[in-house]
Length: 214
Image: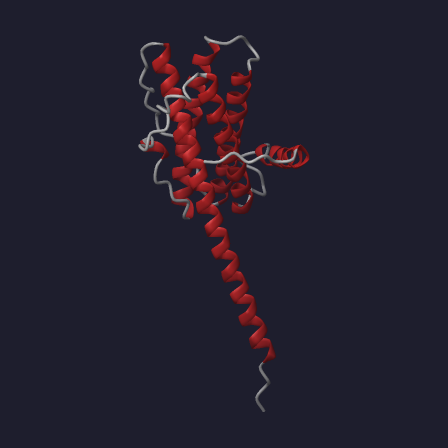
C-alpha cells in the first residue's frame, strides 16, 4: 500500500460531502446509491491505510513488521458485494469492525491521555465505519430487508500491553487491506456498468438511425 499526498482543499471538500452521506438516516426515504457507497468505501480505504501507518509508527511496531501478516481475519475476507446478499455480508463485517475498533480504542485510552492523536484517529475511523453501516442499512431497507447483526463473539483477550498493541495493529492491517480490495472491486463493477450503459446507448442510437420500411 502506498501513501498519496492530496491537497488540503480537495480533502476538505471530500470530507464535507462524505459527512453529509454519513449523516443519512438508515430509514431515509431516499437511500444512498451504490455509487455513493463506493465513494464512502474509497475514502475509508485511504483513511484505513493512513490509520494503520500511524498506529504502526506510534506503537513502535514498524521496525518489526509483525503486523503485516499475509493471513487476514476471517470476518474481513472474501466479501463480494453482489446483490443484497453481498451487502448483508458487508454489513456484518462492518459491525464486527465497529466492535474491534471499540476494543482497540479502550486499550489505547489506558495508555494515552484524552485527546491524544491516536485516540482521535481511531474515533474518526470508527465514525466512518458506523456511517457505512447506516448507509448499508438504508439500501437494505429500500429492498425490504432488515439487516440483523448476530451476537458477536467476544474478541480474544490479549495478555500484556505488547500483545494488545500487536493484536490491534494486525486488525488495522487486515482492515486496510480489506477496504482497499473492496474499493477496487467496486471500482471494477462501476467500470463494467458504465461500459454496458455506453453499449446500450450506442445500440439505441443505431436503432434510431435505421430507415423506416415502406
